[in-house]
Image 1 (tube, rainbow, N blue to C red):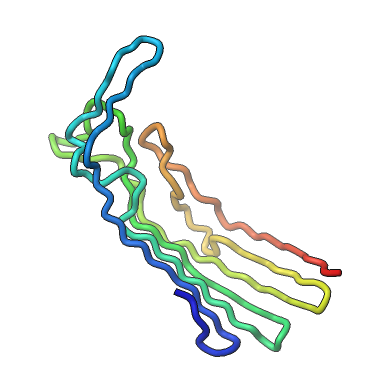
Image 2 (image 1 turned 90 degrees about the vertical axis):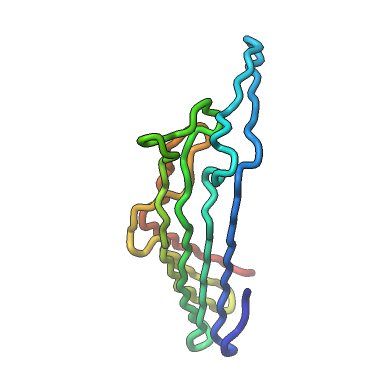
Length: 160
């Protein structure tokens, strides 16, 4: 959704709710040896890896004195499972299905923008709180890739 609260205040938001389940396991064929392996049937009915149950974004901007604009927002994701999808045994702990889990997170960002008639300047700061969070799960195994720490991006644009 997107909309204006006032002529100077805009809000953008989105929510995804996912219920991704594995319906069937794959059989992999080694092109060199011809050997076929089938993933564990214990994966059937389980949540797909690297798929959060929810993802949420919220971004808001506000114009100040015509030329200035400030903005802030958040990005959130639920926890995600991290496992080798073609494994012939499902990850268990004491006999119970127990894959590695990448924790949920909320990341806060902000922006300051100045717009003159022939140029603009913008400062974006991502991950304001410098939080350690995991952005994604590596495709070939059960480990995660950390998201960037606090990052500042300054851009200038000249119009002519």
